[in-house]
Image (cartoon, protein in one colour):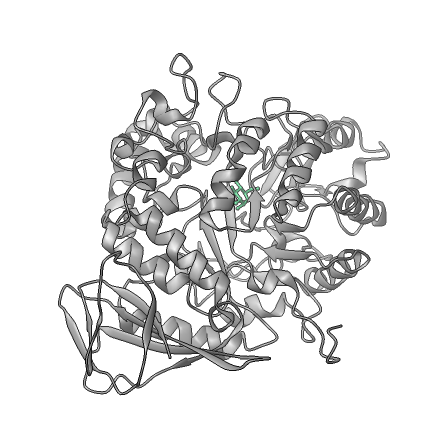
Length: 566
Ligand code: GLC
């Protein structure tokens, strides 16, 4: 409680999160794979950049078939990344810098190499049998999967195991069997695992595939649909509505139970969930009394056009759905999807404007490693894929066909079937291997070719670089209560063209109401706006040397974004 009796805003509401894909960030020991010591060596860089919270994609022990999203021990660290001691050191070093540590927690499934699953599949009467979801095949012959349930990765998600003549359910791939949360021992064990990490000082969790925790207890078939492809507005895909496999009411109750586990700890911790679907469904995960997850990703943003009208429509929907005390999440890239800058045709100016929106909208921004230097997608040949999803497609259809489809997917749908493309090593400098690993080492994925121009070293010395632009906006956001805690309102832009977006952020402080006005020019043209405000000043611009305020006019350059205040 603050001294005036008002509940204090928890820290995570105004934080900025930076996602690290540990395998790709910094290799300290020359094996070509990023590791925790490498990350520790870059904490000063992250602090200087101005991000507070770091989310680490999974670092647990794992056969690494899905690079950590297949866990074989939830209470140990993958040896290629370090040891539990290194992890504790990382947490400590981060806390000493007032930074927060967010762990990626995969509760829905384990690796098929997890000792629990090895036991579970060994016999029908093994005590761990019921820790996973096993069923007989469909009667009368038992040779068909138990239900028509599709997994999110296409195709039926049941896998036949000849050893016991039964099928196990997996919402992702066969190597990631789903845990059975209807078994109280599973739930108790996983909640204890969450506590184990909270006690180590973890400040939050990113929850993987959290909408798949429960399925229908009666194993009813999912109803059919006419829809083939997924959309952000409708849940149906591949001619099926996943009513019995996703967003189950028991899953929503589970969010609240998990929240009570986190609430056992102080200072406050937070959870952000990986959930897809229309906004009202996403909102359900936060609980009707804001007593569920703290945040959910709004993946609609990943694909929104960089146009004033599209952004305005999305923000209006989001503002309606996620009113205070709810907070939206603004995310444009991650380890599964095409990097935003590559969707924007590689344009640095557009990427800067996109960031100006992301860091000035109401909500919690999530930045994907390398986004701050304009790191691009690598168009890697499919036949050399390491990504398990691409490998599955290749196995089924052959690399020639998958390559062809991927070329089309990349240019038309702006997606890549091969997730390696967005996971290439961080570009630290213009030297051999971009400074990610020693020159003599072979990085686990090839470096993206544009690293000679797009890297931390070069961009730190250039005030006009995208990196410097991120730093300016992150600093402005950190220092301005209007930007990091204020309300949001679109402003009337008078006679200015429709390609201009203008909004105000306002926050009540002990020192009165603070206001910041954001102006974003989504066009190749200069834009003039009549300045009706006295004594305004520019807090920050996407351009290092720009003087937008010119007497009674405000002049914006093409794709320029500014924040002004009185
Ligand atoms: C999530 C992760 C993805 C992973 C999958 C299975 O979607 O983001 O990388 O492959 O879950 O855990």
